[in-house]
Picture 1 (tube, rainbow, N blue to C red):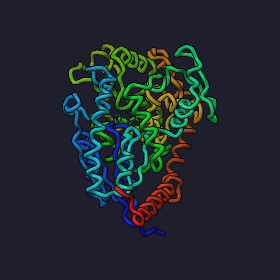
Picture 2: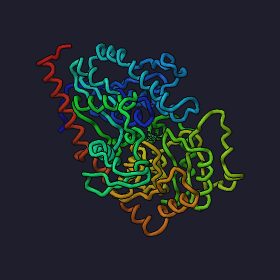
Picture 3: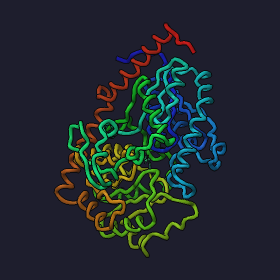
Picture 4: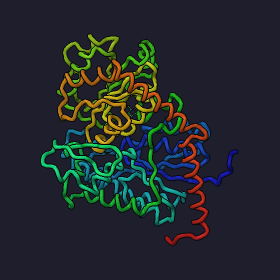
Amino acid sequence: MERQIRQLHVFFLPLLAHGHLIPTVDMAKLFADRGAKTTITTTPLNASSFSNTIQRCQDSGMDISVKILKFPAVEVGLPEGFESADMMFSSREGNKWELIDKFNQATSMLQQPFEQLLQECKPDCLVADWFIPWATDAANKYGIPRLVFHGTSFFALCVSECIRLHEPHKKVQSGSDSFVVPNLPDNIELTKNQLPEYSAQDAETDNFTKMLKAAREAELKSYGIIVNSFYELEATENIDKAERGNKSAIDEHECLKWLDSKQPDSVLYVCFGSMNTFSFAQLNEIAVGLEASELEFIWVVRKQNNDDKDDDWLPGGFEKRMEGNGLVIRGWAPQVLILDHETVGGFMTHCGWNSTLEGVCGGVPMVTWPERAEQFYNEKLMTQVLKIGVSVGTQKWVKREAIEKAVKEMMKGERAQEMRNTAKALAQAAKKAVQKEGSSFSDLDALIEELISCCNQNMKTPKAI
Ligand code: UDP
């Protein structure tokens, strides 16, 4: 039976980074699909990366809109148009931590104009990124609940909390000594080198550590958290998959035609997310490893800089030799379309949570190659807990032989088949969960009902502003 619901207005405030904007747009679509009014607040450049998706949603009758805030990049000493956290990692200019500080400072300056928007639009609830601690105060000011969105897995959140509380990394000497993360159901071993830079350091004083502390405090004061967990949240149409997060650097029909010509489960897909910073030497090593594996592949390489000569780092004649067997995409790839294709049989990934989930939903085993942040935790979930991943190794520099060995192990042989069977079963479970009566479907219903009852309550007892 369809329930009649009062139209709930949910505001979204994502972190300015592809990996956070993409799932936020997914969430806004899900709420809108259940009859809620949804508004995403972001900056001009970020809004343009998903404007076509929003247009299609509006055309299909969803009540979804975008409010734009000007990002004060220049005011804090960043170049004009520096509006995405992705740029901090790909930029060759300036010290990374300095850029992060400035970026956070500019994000803090959005508080006042954002509060003005809350005043004008009077939403019933705010879903804001964990990295925006002031969002809880802003929501409290207007008497509405704030939900925190981390953008990562439950597993990574648990590992992170256990490390923060018990500090097992302080009991080992060197960065490569391993320790067990206490209080987890599985025996998860990590090294200090695998921890996010910020949790390995002790400093209490730097701005970033202060911001993390504020984010933790804000989380405790907020209404709850919302997690994009395990399954793809909604079956979207192909065009939304193709333009997920950005315009593709390849025509999706060309890409699908290429995939259509291959055998089921034969193609390896290689992509390291939106912030990858591999050196040219490491990219060269990957090329040699892929060629030696003799596998068919699609390899996505981020453009580091418009001035870079793309082919400088490729081994001589690489693309000519790979013609028909290997497709190199320079720039943004239609990742979800690729992962969902039946001829794709494995994914070499940096273990960003969105990519990891997309791999699971595509039913493919993974070669895990984490680079930073909580990606090492997601790797453990894939390799040790779910057993659908092969680690490429924990070294900073990964040799061609290790790359070749890991991709072959994932794509061919008995172990590969076992992992593929498990991955396919997980993908089935994911699809079920989002169907009517599925666990995620019911969870979202329950959340919407709870938020409606919360705002009915608020209307009876308005909070002072
Ligand atoms: N993505 C994509 N094409 C690309 C690179 C990335 O569609 O060429 C998407 C990918 O599908 C995922 C997101 O960008 O949804 C990356 O998020 P993730 O959490 O995996 O990693 P991050 O980029 O935040 O490190």
